[in-house]
Length: 368
Image (cartoon, rainbow, N blue to C red; front, side, top):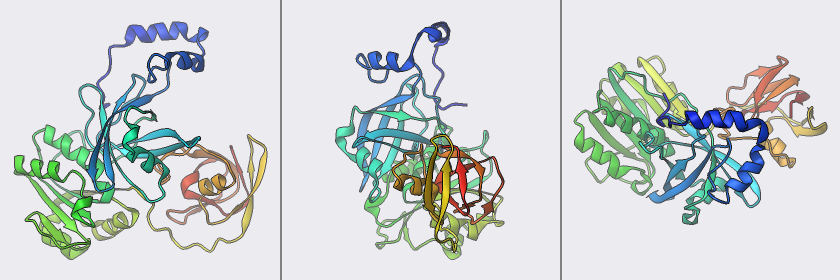
């Protein structure tokens, strides 16, 4: 079920179907935006209607999508796009709460060194901006009926989708026991600290522990140390009976998977950066033919195709840049490519490649 309640638009939809043969959407959008920048014929857009600090180097944005947005569920990402310095830039961000009754959503954005989109969104001057917005994607979702006991493991920005799930559970009266272990370098980098403590005060079944890696703990709900088996066993003695959701950087998630795979009844994880890539011995370049544009390029082996194409001045569609959202997927009609996440090599013809996590092994023909 979409997190955004459906709008009573059936008569308007019939009118749009009747008018569609006579309307050019770009022309309609051009004139409609003079009245309201979010009015479009079919393009999903969202206005930034709230911009508030969330933690050191992080902000929470409140977005009001237009009626064309397909919605998202707690735990999912959405792609947001903006023109920055004349370049169209798209990145994915997680909802940090279920959508409101009025359809508004919130995302919390952490600044990333060199991150063009995060720097853009952290600027308070962005209040009132209109962004492209895509439908929700991702599988870090609660089941229709939550049962048993749960553990949420978060590191850094990985708290964002888990916060949305916690708020979803809180709206249901916290029907299952949940333990949250949330790692950050310092307490100033903790997002939602006050909101999490308020949830813990209201719900006896919610056990909260902030785990700091860069400074000593100073509060009763703080601990220190990096994730390992001893810490998990000490903080969650019944871990073997718990269902576990984990989110954070690739290295953190890889550690969780290595520690818990086969030890718990359910482990669902999601990384917001690619996991450490297996070493590959790719060297040199290969010929890459772009079938639709007719271009021939020499691209380096061992480099993500998306990065290599951008270095040649191309701008393929992209989103999460970590192999989740499929925005950059394109057809491959010939050649062999490597999945940089796993090292797996595939030469099967007529397949789709995720450009952000694939590199060329042999000459390729891509549908670009």
